[in-house]
Image (cartoon, rainbow, N blue to C red; front, side, top):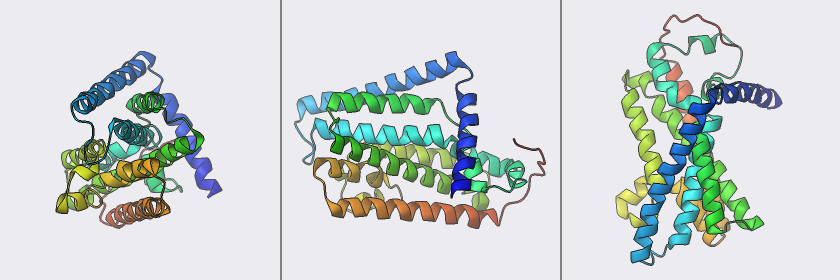
Length: 261
């Protein structure tokens, strides 16, 4: 484990330096993402000015959901931004250079890039924490727990989605839309859905695991919800690892023999 952590942090230092090397572009992307998120949240603020609650959820709950959802997505982009390139890399054979090194292949790929937009999401999460007054030690700990587990779920689903080319060929667009849909649904309260659609929100598109369960924990702590959150996160990440390495058996080399440092 120590060896993997050392390797990961070495990758992270390199990817972070690369992401902030162009300062103007970095700041522009970050500020635009903050603005985009705040405009989206403003629509919820307008909605709750007209309607006091939705299925028992108030504006305060939506603030917590936004803090958890965008924070989790921001962490996934900053610390595991390589997931968004996986489908294209598999299709073009660009994972060959990663396979030449005696390191964890999956970790190497997903940690190989850091996306500047992630910092905009993290900044938005910080703003939401301040606006919602989610600053007590217990509440803040639950927010951070939700962001951490949400990050793991976002990364895991991205790995699954971007592993589809192992079986389906050039479907990068489909993989991207699937991941984008997950982020969008994670910013809506899952309790507005019912029946089969709500089941989908906890399985095929596990938006409920990312944001709904953490917010329920913040609203009223429950060991049942905590266990549900941790078990669901572990199960999804296990499926992701299995999916990637099972698909890797079908991988056909693109004959890219370059070296990575």
